[in-house]
Image (cartoon, rainbow, N blue to C red; front, side):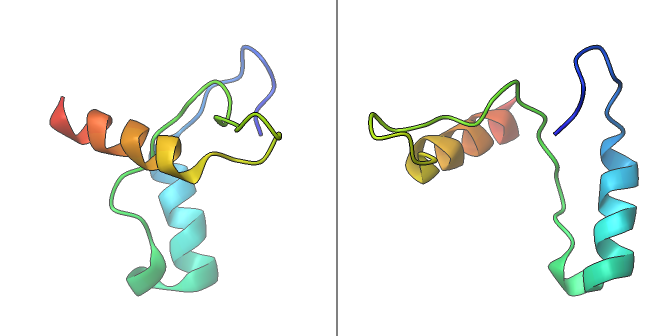
Length: 59
């Protein structure tokens, strides 16, 4: 989670994950979104999250 107005460096996020988890678990792409999509019950909507990720790859 990032404070409003703060900059997000996706390369730095990948470096942190690589150090903590290793290269094989580091994501190739990091997407920054305003908020996690949720279902009516309030759970994270994983299907919609995957769709957002696929849509970003098409750009």
